[in-house]
Amino acid sequence: MTAEQTAKNIAEILENKKAHDVRIIDVEGKTILADRFVIATGQSVTHIRALAGEVELQMKNNWQRVPDHVEGYSTGRWVLLDFEDVVVHVFHEEERDFYSLEKLWQRSRLQ
Image (cartoon, rainbow, N blue to C red):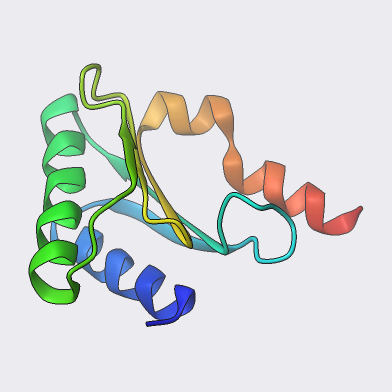
């Protein structure tokens, strides 16, 4: 499965669990971290953890993919799931506004 298809599948999982403002950012060739970022917002710590957990569960059950690295479950304000070619960021609204990954990567495209 390509990074684009993986990102689309993850975005659909997040949207089905009522994540807000789900975005896919193409970072291929701009960083060695991944080819795509999927960014979404949850409404509470519980919601953020549930969103990340659902992505993990469905990716494992449907596509036999598990993240290589997971961070942030303990605080639940920003959970990161690293699927190698796709990195998923599930933010609380305040953290998403503060870190503003969309703006960061938009600026990097201009340079």
